[in-house]
Image (cartoon, rainbow, N blue to C red):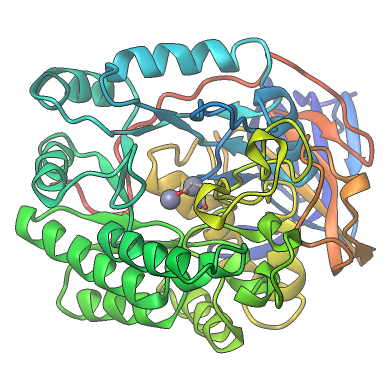
Length: 470
Ligand code: URP
Ligand code: ZN
Ligand code: ZN
């Protein structure tokens, strides 16, 4: 006699953001309906004996098939990007519907839905990128989209085609406050970067490694402080994305000490790369690691580890921004090596995010398993209004789960499932990798990828649940 379960995960070492315990997990119609000892037999069974089972990852910062200024193109669309997510233990992604200046936000969202349609293998929600906060956007479009489930948006303080000035940021933050949305801020001072870039160019210093010198910690520190001040003026929580090192962390700690609700995200590149990965000489190979903010140095990596351990960081995201090194208009736009100003910013990381943090964080003794779950799944789901359907192992939650294999594995781009021709982590030794990824109770990865194009469902987001309702 079988129980009411389509699937039972048996003898799991269940890890949530608050507890680790041994249990069976009973799944029906894509959801967890029971957690307990000795559950009745299911139609299907997976024996997880002795293995850790975590919630599927929620990667709350990744870029897929985002329109770029020609000729630049992203390598991953919703097919290849979500395929690599699934194989790396991520079951929900939140990429960006980016408004071009002059475009309506609604048009950007409609276009992005078309890009995802029929392709996504994992569930997905959208952040918005607000680059043109016209009165129509501020008064009508943005409030309407928030009500429809697009409850977070990114504000850029840099990049000519995306950046907002302080007055515009205040306007957009006011909408976040009025409608209970989450504002994510890319904090780098655009004018300082431009001034430094021109000086470097005038001195003939245009190799990829000079990208790091054009965006020193100071430009991130100043913009982080300014973003905090603008949020304080409006009295609204914000989340600072891709924090790279000590001086920005200090600003966030200071703000928290004042009682301000400043949340923060960091990414694998600030734990596992340094500015040296952009090159020690003027060769072009370092273009692979050009991203913003740039990776810093080993002492800054330690500051980021401390922030992950002690709660400074709310979420750990990949900031997957997939550009090929060779061909198809990635890191060599126009088919040739370019001065660093023209190298597309961003590195791939969707598939390696979870395993890197599990290996070096949990198995390296730096963070607890509960903290790993909080950073990679529970808090991202709470920050963007997807919890408790996503990001936890609980009765009623979607059966999005990862069974972990602890054992040595070496990262090889040839083994990854994105469409990017490199990984910045080539040759790096890991201590764990997802053995099985389940989405809504379906096995999507078990050492083989089981495609389910179009079965990844759009998730309308609710209000962030990191803070009490106002
Ligand atoms: O260099 C990066 N981070 N590229 C992706 C876009 C962004 O600002 O997050
Ligand atoms: Zn950014
Ligand atoms: Zn990004």
